[in-house]
Length: 251
Image (cartoon, rainbow, N blue to C red; front, side):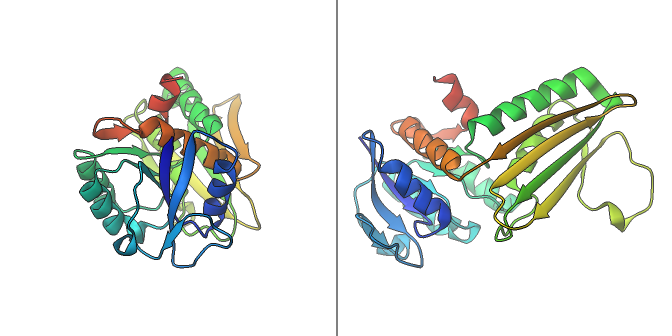
């Protein structure tokens, strides 16, 4: 049994985690942290890590970058692994996560969907095959309540492509200048509207052909299931950085 603390327990992803966990017998949510108390929760609730006192095995984080400092401090002090699913971290915060991983195991992914992680591998393969003859554009769409743009997933895809096309430069805003597109550019575009759960498309545009790879998330459950699987996987692991490729290779 894996006992889990979830951050952001009153948010939409928190609700999805709670619902998904209720159908499993290999884990249990023992505590939740949020500024607002969740309704009908059967676990310990606290507004901050400073108020929390509970035995647990793993923290699953779907909250806000502002919580990172206190979460890392608590996790390191209690030797607790963390599954970090929050996006929008600054470079300084990403370095904090890497530093903490020297003491505790940290599973860090901008997207917990199996399908998205397959897209990442397919995009890397396509970039390798096409080389610089094809222009690459990434379009992501999310609901109108999402705070960060571009999405962490779009950046995951771009970063993966850049491991193949190492001279790539990210371009987010084309209306700011007037010039022809350079082959080394990776265009990244964000759409926000309605209740779109998550849409990602990678376009490889050549002179006479276009390849499109896309993924559509129909509900937040796909992310919750992936995060819970990561939590069970991370329990008992050695300190270090882990991601979906580690989880998939363990299957």
